[in-house]
Amino acid sequence: MIYLIYVFGCGCDIISRRSRTAISVEILRAALEGSKKTHIVYRANLNFEVVNRYLCLLKEKGLIEQSGNLYITTEKGREFQNIAGELGM
Image (cartoon, rainbow, N blue to C red; front, side, top):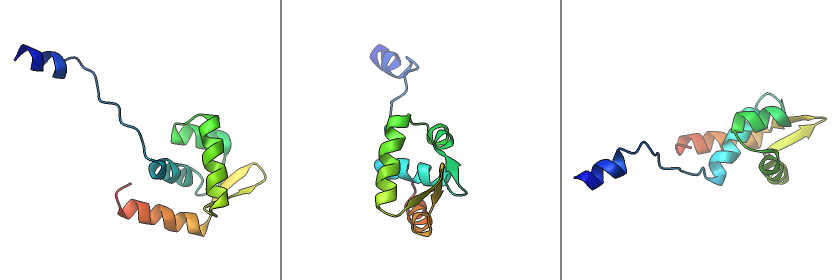
């Protein structure tokens, strides 16, 4: 009994990592109406290095496009986001 109180009463939360799909959805959501990279970083709660890698990947897949310094979710990106939402992501 004392052991259970120690483990569950310590106030520590279990840290869970987001999947690549969940991170992609967050980035696409942030860029729905066009966003600068800084806004995407804050909105997705990521650092610039990680956001740069994901933006590159999302551009290669045609899910996001860059117009000047703005990133905009494409129609294909919106479809991806909708499907991920139906799956609970």
